Image (cartoon, rainbow, N blue to C red; front, side, top):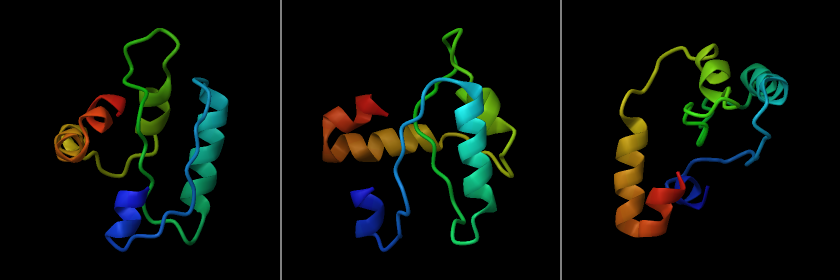
Length: 88
């Protein structure tokens, strides 16, 4: 959030949700309906665990997928702090 704000963006909220479909779906729906929000960034939920539904839920909201964005973000953040690269 600090990096985004440092570049002039407004971060309205940061939130950690449980690995469950309903809370994630409800929160994404609320954010998408909010008039002051034009971008939602989701980190985590790589989709390899049996309980991980993040990829499925988030993909239903995508207007356009930014393929490779995560890899670029990890590289840039890793240059600033190596621990950030592995925490994404």
